[in-house]
Length: 70
Image (cartoon, rainbow, N blue to C red; front, side, top):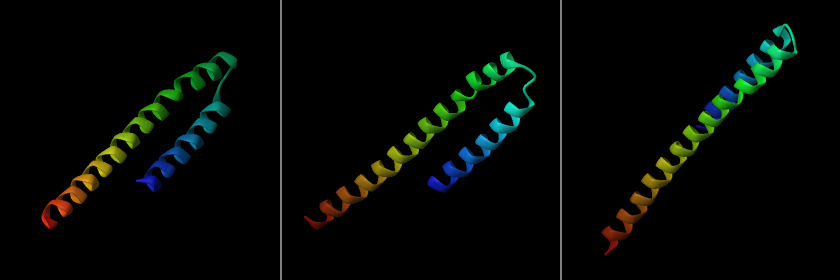
C-alpha cells in the first residue's frame, strides 16, 4: 500500500513537472498548479480509508482471539 502510494506520487510529480515546463504563460501555470491539489487530496483520503479498513480487520481478529480464549 505504501509502495503504491509512493509510486503514484512520484509519477504525478513527474507529470506535473512536465506539464509546468509546457505551460505557455503564467496563467496556464497558475491554473495547472491550482488543479493539481485535488488528486493528492483524493489519494490521501483513499489511503486513510484503506488504513482504517486494515486496522478494523486487525482489531476484529484480535477480539476474536480473546473471545476464543474464554
